[in-house]
Length: 127
Picture 1 (cartoon, rainbow, N blue to C red):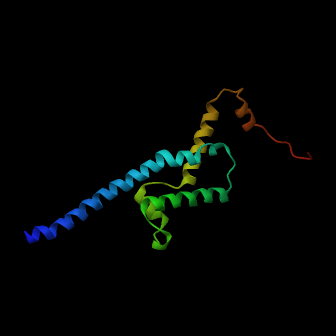
Picture 2 (tube, rainbow, N blue to C red):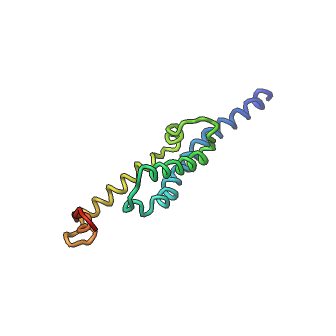
Picture 3 (tube, rainbow, N blue to C red):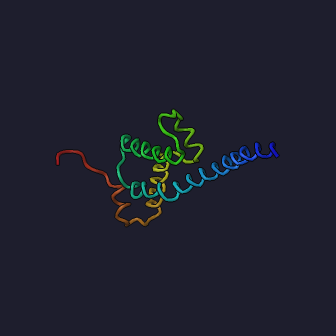
């Protein structure tokens, strides 16, 4: 009986560790399904600088660190956190969304106004 009493806490911790991995993956899936689309809404048509993309990445890493219960003081690399939650960089996802939007424009008919603007050449000179 004493051996069983000693074994129970270890079994409990083993179950918690197994469930925590599932919970972490579910949090990552929730982030990809709900949080990220809200953050990227409409950005495929806006002009983004490297600074703005970096700010998006930093904000997302804050959320992923919170999901993983990790602080900056823990000194865990971003790549490890992204790997454990299975979330790629938001700047890469933004690039995918832009390419998707571009392919959408190319499929539209010739007279479509946004397609016309996309193919328009701007003359240089004075205003």
